[in-house]
Length: 323
Image 1 (cartoon, rainbow, N blue to C red):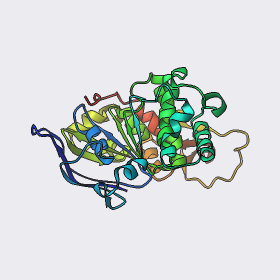
Image 2 (cartoon, rainbow, N blue to C red):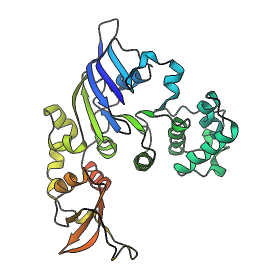
Image 3 (cartoon, one colour):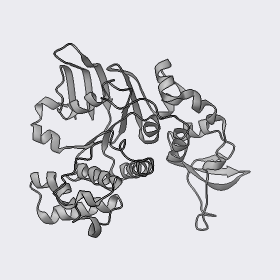
Image 4 (cartoon, one colour):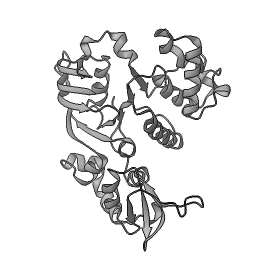
């Protein structure tokens, strides 16, 4: 658990990067921080692992102040993924991923098993990629390596600062899907900074909207879409674009049952094919997947990610990266 207790960051010239942040990020939560350029989201992220020192207040990890941790102990338990992939070009992929485990004293056999496990987890065949250099990989493949390098020593917390924003749209979308699936399996606490509302809606369990160094609203994607706190959030999220989509039915989102699934006795919550997107999102806030019925017969399934993705596709990308 990460707690911000009245945290501020001010620079000697009087500039306030963040003001009076009060926030708790739960264990295993995918927590997205978003806002316009200069709003303080990257500063907030970097204060967690003490890359930037706070001026006032307290940040706690598992109820212990970050200042009470030894710096190596703190950072070894926090993976960090940057927009600039920052792999060491003279090292192999194996060597890049092995850095923190080696510093922690893991033996070579354990490190090798961990590297292979992580590469397989993100769809990179270890035999093919383990001994390659970063220049031999595409941008998307390099960023996959950046993600698993942050996971190498099995940290409890992962910080991700605009990790996909430099990628082409196809690679970016694929990595978003991979990260969403990965998080369902590893259940790490992820703090993810982005300027892209589509990305935030797609990935976040909760989203923190910031402006001018302060938190404007924290809530689930559903909260922000349905109940924006003010005009700033409403405009940034693009709520007006979503309002018309909410009235559409689920037909195009239903995944038909395959031959093996037909006739099975499902224990899932069931909804009508005529259920609106808005109503489906309400139900899928508490359920990962539901069956869909038409005139009493189950015709398919729909999951939370499909609905979130559909809504995200109707949002314009808003905001700009931090300077």
